Amino acid sequence: MDANSIVRVGIIGCGGIANGKHMPALAKLKNVRMVAFCDIIEEKALKARERYGTPDCAVYTDYRKLLEDQSIDVVHVLTPNRSHSFITVDSLEAGKHVMCEKPMAINSEEAQKMLDAARRTGKKLTIGYQSRQRADSRFIKAEADAGTFGDIYYAKATALRRRAVPTWGVFLNEYEQGGGPLIDIGTHALDLTLWTMDNYKPKYCVGTTYHALNNTTDQGNAWGNWDPAKFTVEDSAFGFVVMENGATINLESSWAINMLDTREAITTVCGTKAGADMLDGVRINGVRQNLQYVMKPDMNAKGAAYFDGVKGESPADREARLWIDAVVNDKAPFVLPEQAIVVTRILEGIYISAKTGDIYRFDR
Image 1 (cartoon, one colour):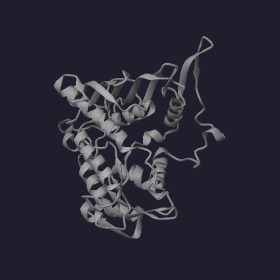
Image 2 (cartoon, one colour):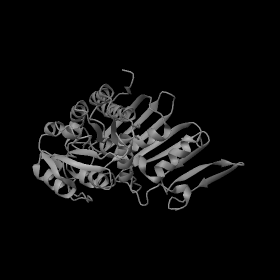
Image 3 (cartoon, one colour):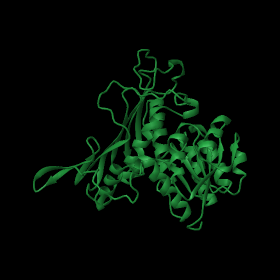
Image 4 (cartoon, helix red, strand yellow):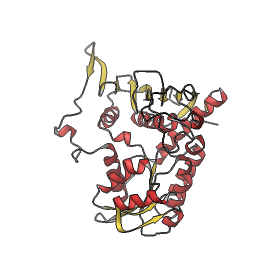
C-alpha cells in the first residue's frame, strides 16, 4: 500500500474485546477507517457503526457477506475462540490482512490452518497479544536481546486472579472457548515469556487443571456471582514445560484461587548472568564485583531513553498502530503467527496432559 493510503477495516465480532480494545484504538489512527461491522447480534453491529463507523459503512450478521467487499483491506476477527480459525482462513482467502484476537485458535490443528492460509495467500496475519506492548515487557525484552540475562534456563509465566471470573459472554462455555483461564489469560503470560526467551521449541509438558471453586456459592467475585451450572471450564490450570534446549517454564493461571499474591500477564526469567521479574515494577537482579544487586529502572521516566514516540500510548493503541504500520509499509507484524501457534500448541499440550494424566510430548 502507499504510505498515504487510507486503510479500510472490517470488524467481525462487536462484543467486549472489540469495544474495549480494538475499535477505540483503531479510531485514534488517522489513516484508518472502519467501514464494515459484523455481529450475529445485529444490534451490536449497529451500535458499533453509530460510534465508530464512516457515514456509508455497512452492517452484517453474516461475516461472509462482509468479506465480499473487495475494498476492505484489513479484517479484525474478534469472535469467540471456536470461530477464530475458520473466519480467519476465509478472510485471508478473500484477500484481507487479518488481526485475530488471542488465542490464535482452540487447538493446534485449527491454528495450523490459519498459518497455512496466511502463507498460501501472502496476506499478513497477527494475533492480539498486546501485553508485549507494555513498557515493562519491552524493557525486559530489550535486556534479554542485549544479553543481560545470558542463557535463560528457567521462567515463570503468571496469570493469577483471586476472584475475577468473567461472567459475561461465553467465557464459561468450554465448547465456544476451548478452555478457561489457561486459554484466556494464561495465554498472555505464556506468549510474553516465550517472546522474552526467544525460545519456541517445546519438548514436553505436564499439566493439571482444576474445577476446585466452580461450584462455590459464596463467591465474592469481582464481576458478580457466576452460575455454577454454566461454569464448564476449569477455574485454575498449571503447566510445567520443558524446551528442547533444556529450559523450563512454570505456567500458572487462574480466575479464582485462594491466594493473595495474584498477578496477571507477567513473566519472571532466570539466566546464567542475571534475572528479571515484574513483581514490583521491573527488577533485574544479579551479581557484580562479588556483590548481589537489584536494579529497578524508573518506568515512569520521561527522558529520551523511554520516549515511545507517542505520548500516553496504551498497549492497545501501540498494538493497533504497529499492526496498521506493518500493513501499510509491508513489514512483518509485531506478533508473528509462527510464534502464536507455539503458544497454542503448549496450551493444548497442558490440557491434554491434564486430561490423560500423562506427559505430553510435542514430537508426536
